[in-house]
Length: 219
Image (cartoon, rainbow, N blue to C red):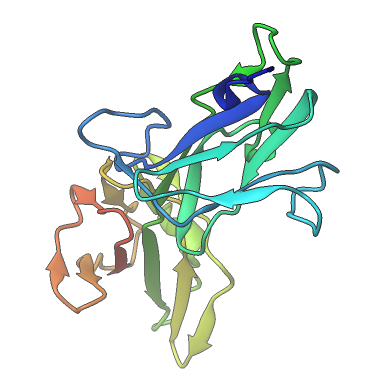
């Protein structure tokens, strides 16, 4: 009688974690497992799950597994859910390229093929430029920055003397940011006003967003 331990079959095991601080690494005691996420083997490497390709979902402990997979290269990917950003892996289009050995080979069992994601925070920055008395300034003249980096705004919408510009700079949760603008001769600097989705006032210096939080700042 031949008995094969299923654990020793060519296989892939991994975890799915909520990367709370978005650092791309698993932090024990902080990062919690995510259940119900789809993990699949992208056999044709097109970046999407296709009918016939192996897929599974993570359990309550954030674990997933593929048992008795085909030896050779297996590209393991996840389906990123709306409102989340993948922080690990970030290369190979967010997938793991796993070379699985034959039964009995040292690389037959592949563990800790993990995925990390964080809830994407959203920041909207609104700049109002009032060009009364013949002014001609645009948002670029004010060099509005977040954390020392210039913010790129969409084209403005003008109503009367006021042009409103909007931007959505990419931000990370838990990071401390400062918002600033340059003084422009002939213009009076307004006051920053930041609010969360519920309308509560939020400090802008420093500005710290929680995972999944949406904040709008206007000046």
